[in-house]
Figure 1 (cartoon, rainbow, N blue to C red):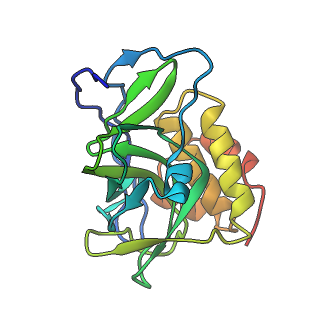
Figure 2: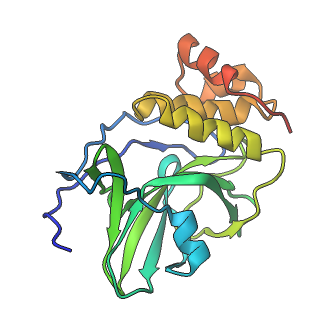
Length: 226
């Protein structure tokens, strides 16, 4: 498969201080390139590639962020062909922290390292060369408001989604797909995760920059409680 050259894409990352969530300036995401594919084709997800054994997920670590491209990892393509995967994770992935004091994370999208992806027929995708291991970044949300941001020293493993979290995770994925995915959508989804667990709205406001509109939109996503 002949693939066009890539440009660097920047994705929104929300850097939060340990146990105190504060937001950094937004960055706009833009795709590497635009392509078309044969009509009727669709792209597999990382979920299905992992289940089929076509891809192996390597070590997953934090990078100091709590939302956005907050987790770094590697993916190994175990096949002899280039794998083109959707950036969407359906369902979202639950990543359990190996450090008690660090956040557990909810990943909804996967990108190449540095936040790279390409657009093909209106869908964002990543490419894994045959037999190679590439660095990736998970777009993820912190689940535990009171815990520290995951650092490079904190490792994560894929785990079964807690039953109380699954409906909210599904709602966040649907919300992301219902509009242009940007910093506003990410911010509202992150706040929704906390409000749905009964976190004090004022405490969220004190540590995370949100408008009244953000709070109202986030509250509408609070479909479960712990």
